[in-house]
Length: 365
Ligand code: 5AD
Ligand code: FES
Image 1 (cartoon, rainbow, N blue to C red):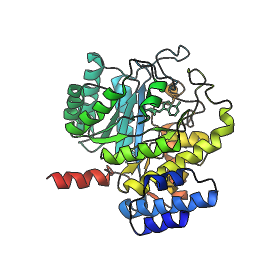
Image 2: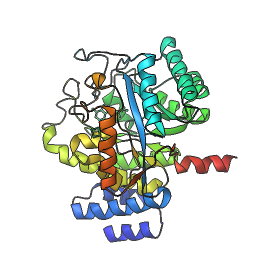
Image 3: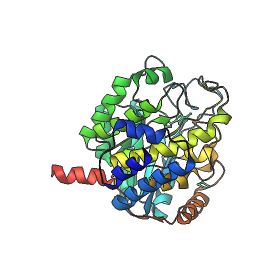
Image 4: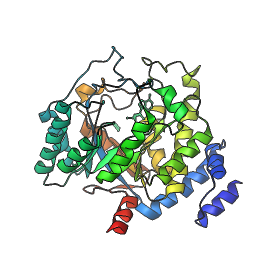
C-alpha cells in the first residue's frame, strides 16, 4: 500500500480518504520519513526551500470563553490576566518590521465588546501607518460578527486564523460548554472569506476520542472549504483545565502525539499542495526539534513569539510551552539557526502569501 501511495503522489494523483488514513496510521519511522519526504518535495515545488516568519504577539490573555482544553479559559483562576497597551503592542510590531519579519500575528483571548473592537481597529491603522503598509497583519482573535471582521479588514488586517478545532461535531461539543456553537464557528469562516481575508483554520490533533478517520475528514474539510492557511498542532494537556486527566498518562503518549502531528502536516501538504502550513509551537513543546521537523514534513510557516517576555508566563494554552524565557531577538537567532540547520532559507521582508490564495485571486480578477 505504501509504495502504491508514493507512486500515486509521484503521478500527481489525488489520494483517496483511506490512503490518507493509511498515512496517519503509519507506525514505522522509516515509512513516515518516506511520506515526509514526498510532502517536502511538494512544498518545495510550490514554495521553494523557504519558510516564512510571522512574529506572534500574544497581547492579552483575557478571555470570555471557557474551552475545556485551554489554559487561559475564563474559569481558570490561576492565571494572572493582562492586556498590553497600545504602546507595548506597537513596540512589538515595529521591532518585527525593523527585524525584517514580513508580517505579524496578533493573538489574544476572545472578546467581542466595542472597546476591544475599536482598540484593535486603532492598532491596525497605526501599524499600517508606522510601517508604510509594509508589515503584513494576521489576526487570531476568535469568533466575531461579520461587521467586526469588516472593520478590521478595512483597518488593514488581511489574514485571519480561526481553528475549527475538530470537524467532528460530537468531539467539538465535548470540548466546549453548550453555548459554544460549531455552526457559528463555521459561519465565521465563511464570513471571513466573504470579507476578503486569506482564511486560516486548523484542528487539534490527538484529542480524546478522535480517530484517524476524524482527522482525514478534517483534511477533506480544509480542501472542500478552499482554505488558504493551516495552523494545527497536537493536543497537549494543561493541568488547570477540565480535560486534564482525560488520558490516563499523558506523558506516555507525548511521542505518539508528536508523530501524529507530523503525519497530519505531511498528509495535508500532499492533499492540498499549495496552502501555507504552520509548524506550530505545540510540536516543539513535545520535541525539542519539533518545529524543524514540521518544516521537513511539509510546513512552511514558523511563528516566533515576539511577546514581551514579562507576559509569556501568563499565556500558556498548554503545559510546558517552550520559549517562555527568551526575548524576541534570542528567539529570532535561535529560530534562524534552526531553520538554517534544515537547509531552508527564511523569506525575510516578504509577506509570504499562501500561493493558493494568490491563485484564487487571479482567477477571480
Ligand atoms: N493543546 C493544544 N492546542 C491548544 N490550543 C488551545 N489549547 C490547546 C491545548 N491544550 C490551540 C487551539 C486554539 C489555538 C490558539 O491554540 O487550537 O485555536
Ligand atoms: Fe524561542 Fe528558540 S524559538 S528560543
